[in-house]
Length: 124
Length: 480
Image (tube, rainbow over all chains, first blue to last red; front, side, top):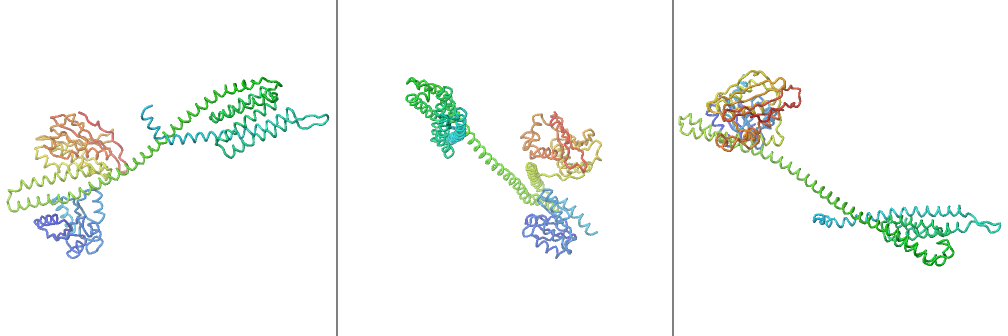
């Protein structure tokens, strides 16, 4: 079973996405800021991290940078979930070490495709 | 004189008077300096003439310098010293020019005396008066003329030989000389007054010009401030739109996401009753999302913040992607969506995301305004122009010439009822046009109401090395 860490500070969005992913059989853990996201990633070693970028305490870019700098978490793929639609914001997310990005409001089908692609890669 | 003229004159009255006095003073000082030079020159010439004309006088075998030489040296020096002193120490003062006037006329008197009252020497008086007119002060001429009259009267009475060169002169002879002086004064005084009038006018004009200039400078400063404020406001607006668009997307994510979650749950439980309503919520959410994206894009383009992200774009896969995206909309309206013609294997050096956005907009528009018809996407390679043309044709309702004229303007749709019937932001074509132009291309439309429309985007074929997109010869903006 694929284990997903969802780092998202907006309660509704977090709840909604968690339930939709759980319905499809994913195991979903949550964190509501960058710092607790890093702690959870180190503790649980999820298969993939869905990272909101606009987070309190530590934003998603910084959290991604730190996760990718840490040997323990470096291999975990990160998908940035951004409400920022511009190309430069996407480029910034990739630069911070995110493996892919999805724009909010999310297209679940698209997101699932990306999760599958990245976790299959990770398994291989 | 108009009211405006009066008000300018009044407003600048003080400055105008100030300027007038400064002109007056400048003329007085300049003329004082000229007279200082003239006095020294006359003194030296007087001595020289005395030496040449009557160098020595004889008493039997003894000779000594003629008395005229001493007169020229002593009297000339005495008369000249005070005017020269004042001219050097108090230039521009009224007392200086009146002293100069007296001194100059006394020099004339001395000259007439030294030449034995010759009539020719009297012309020195006329020359001096003309020179004094340089002051443009008629009072100086009165002082000078008064002195000449008194000199002629007194010397004519007691020593006629000194002034008229005769032993006996009529006691009225001075009147004739004075009359000639007055005759000249009439012209000189009127010219002085005319000069003053012109100076006054020049001062008024300069004052007006200065005040206009001040006004312009103030206005320029105000404009610069307003310009900066407008730029700052425009920047703030763009930031505001970007932030708002982000803030609006977050709750929208919940709206769309929860409606989808409920639809998924309904599917799981087999309770399909609420699905149509949930579809409507989701549809409205997606529409709102389109509106927000459109406004953000347009605001970025307007603020000059939209940038090209250039790369190689394969036309075939791009068109297939666009077709797949729009296929559900096309099918819903019973439309056939086709990619026709050759040239599918072309590659373009352009911004693939923006080109996709443009095509997506044109194809979804075509599907929206066509029912049970055909929408075709065609690629043409225009070799001579070195351009590629991507055209989207439909067999839909078409656009009237009046509507075509405003089609690419923002916030307009072909007509207001269109928005109610077909939805849309009214920004799609405005954005498509601007994006096409950013990519160095152009967009054009041909349409026949009732039969369909064709929108064509023409893009230049560039190489990777071409830094800036070369302009592609634009299509006629609107052909009907």
